[in-house]
Structure formats: C-alpha cells, structure tokens
Amino acid sequence: MSELPLRLKIYRLLVEGYAKERIAQILKKSKSLIHYHVKKLEEEGIVKRVPGSKSPILYTRGINYLKAEQQLKKYGENTDHQGWLVVQASPQVRYHRIGYRFKVQSPPSRTPPWQKQWQASGVQYSEMVITLENGGKWDKNIRIREIKGKNSSSIVIWLPEYVCNSKEELEQAVKLKESQAIKVANWLQKHFGYRLGIIEEYQEPHFAIPIPKHVAEAAVKAGIRTEKVWIDISKEPEIETDDEEMAITLMSLPEITANLAKKADSQEKRMLMLETALKNIVEFAIHQTKIIDALQQMLANAKVSVGSADELLNHKPKPDDRRDVV
Image (cartoon, rainbow, N blue to C red; front, side):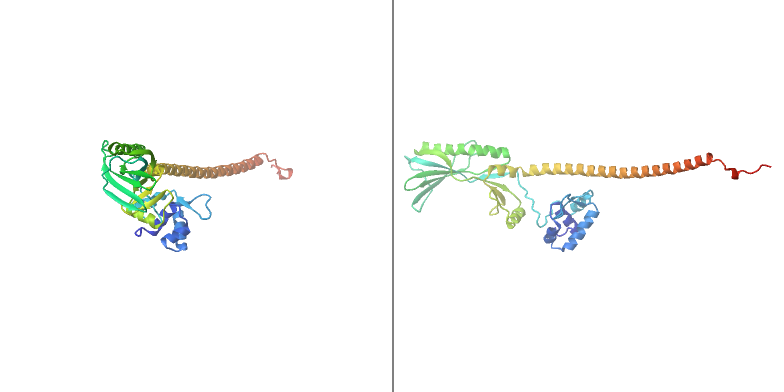
C-alpha cells in the first residue's frame, strides 16, 4: 500500500475501525499529522464520527465517501496494508486424518500381508496399505495398522482424505466415514478371520481450507490462532480446524461475505438517502421559517401602516386648529 496517498491510507484504516492513535502507529506517522488528515476527511464529508464514540473517537463512511473509493480503484481493489488481514477462504475443504479403532477380540486365523513391521516400547506394530473399490468415491489407499500389546490388540484404520467442493459434500462425507471404516473392518474379518469389537474414533479428523500464501504468512506472523482454528503453512497454506461446524462456516465465508457486503452496501445507501432527505427537510424547514418570519414582519409592518391610516382618517381637528373662513 506504499504507493497510496497518505490520506487514502488513513481513510481505509478509519472505516475499518482503527482509532487515530493506532493509525499513527501502523503508518509510522506523527499523531498530529494523522489528526490533520482526519480533520480534512471530515470536512470533505468522506468520513464522519460514529455517534457516541468518545475514547477513542471512531469513524465511518461519510456522505461523500464514494470520492475516496473511486480514487482507491486507481490503485487496485486488493491493495493490502499493515494491520489489515482479510481471510479469503475457499468453498473447498480437504477432509483428512480420519482414523478409527477396533479392539481385536480374536486374533486372525490367517496372517495379513503386512508391508511394514516394527517394535517400540514393548508394542508390536504391523502396517499395510490397501485399496478397496466402492463406487469411485472411496477408491483410494486405506492404511491399516495392527497395534499388539501385552494384554490387548487393536486395529486402526485410516481412511483416505477427501476434497469436498461444497458443504453438502462435506456433510455427506462425514456421515459416510463411519460406515466406510466398518466396511474395511468387515473385509478384514472375512479375509483374515479377525473378530473385531465395536468401532471407536481414534483421533479427531481435520478439515483444511486453502487460503492465499500471503494471508497465511501474515496470520502466522500475527499469531492468529484459537483452540479450534489454526494456520498451517507446512505445505500448501491452509486454515485447519477439527470442528465440523467451523469448517462449514469457513467454507461458507465467501458467500456470507458477499451477502453481508450487499446488505451493508444496501443499508449504507439507504442511510445516505435518509441522511440526505433529513438534511433537505431541515434545510426546507429553515427556509420556511425564514419565509414565515419575513411574512410576519411584513404583516406587522402592514398593521402599523393600517393603524396610522385609521388614526389619520378618524382624527378630528381641535378648536384652536380651526381658521376663520373669509
């Protein structure tokens, strides 16, 4: 945003809710310089104070804000500035880390073709990767691991990740994941003679939504993270969450943002129209008051004139005023 004129930078930050003191810190300018430009923006009607805000004083778009918006377009719609982070979420989500566990009630009658085996801390691990055909959607590698301890054993099944392009697809995938794991468990029982217990969730699945690289880096640098949402830049930049509802919300952000922008724009236009109408009514009322005052003054003057005329017409001359007629 370095190529933007300073006053436009200040305008952008003001309407995003930043106080003047914070803007001075962000732009690394003196407070007096920021105050000067804010005052000019107010005088031009580009910004106006938010009613009731005192400490700090906040600003919103004024009646002439379109002048600034038109100037901003010359510098590009997606110009970033320090302290301004818009998470551009995608309507696509990568649904991964889907793992289920089944306790082994009876060991297999035939040894599975394990592709990898190792031992750690007295526990024996065996692992293989298979592909089960199931109507195309699930025709991907499935990882199966047997964990054999001293007193118990279990089978862990990791299902393949899925890329969903809508919240409907994601909701459907979430519903199908458990039934898919059960089908894999049934396949193990049928082909190798296992007897497995009930299904349990082995770990929380993750939902990853792709975001632009510069947004992800800025978010990591700013330390943006919550218990349910974090940023992953290890490979492709993504917003990660283990909460299904949060994932659906993040997928819906573009649509939600667009709808809110339309509503906000519509509301702002209505407010500006109302403000203009009220201003016109006030100006009209002032004008009418001036006309009424002038008419009243004219009427008062007319009454004085009429009163003077009546007095002259009704005036009777005094005896001393009479003159002898020759």
